[in-house]
Each structure stands twice: as structure tokens, then as C-alpha cells.
Image (cartoon, rainbow, N blue to C red):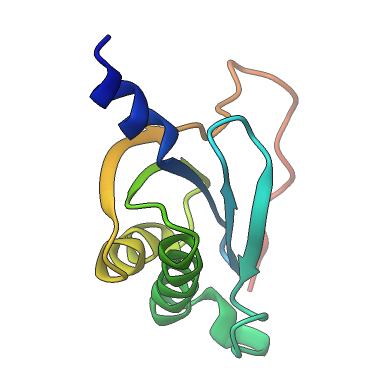
Length: 123
């Protein structure tokens, strides 16, 4: 590896996006795993059922991107977990904040016929 590639790797932050049906979380870390900041939809001003919307996911991603940009990082790696609505919106927010996305990784845990799921809700 050349010296320029090593400096780019050093300036890459990692965004862990957890998208649930009720909320979206973005945890920004260094490449070694040290947490810089944690954002959630409730933290950026969305309350109750509006936390699960795509607009909330976008806002969480944008706010996280601004913090990463202020700390001097220009590249970001995204690790996605969950199937919530704010999943793609958080990525768009990170991109809109001026960060170049290096790669996507889906780390959603999928059971290989594990325990029995809970019964379905009847509404």
C-alpha cells in the first residue's frame, strides 16, 4: 500500500445505521471503533410516531454527517442493520452532508432457523 492510500484509510469514519420500525440510530465511530457521537431521531427533534419516518432518518444521517465533517473526515463507510424506513434516508443524509461514501455493508442478523418468532399481531 502506498502512503496516500494509508492516509485515506486513516481519514475514513464508520457510520453504524440501526433502522428499526420505530426509530433510526446512527453511531459514528473511528476506524478502530471509538465512538465519536450517537444520534437518534428523538435526539434531533422527532417525537412519538414521527421517529419512524424517512424524514427522521434523513435528518439523523445529515446531523451525523455534519459532526463527522467538522472533525475533519471526508470519507465514510456505512454499516446497515435492520429493515426500517429510515435505512436509505440516513444514507442520503450522510451523502448530503458532504461526505463521500466508501462502501456499504449490511450487517443485519438473519437467523438460520433459530428460535420460533412471536405470534403475529391482529389489529
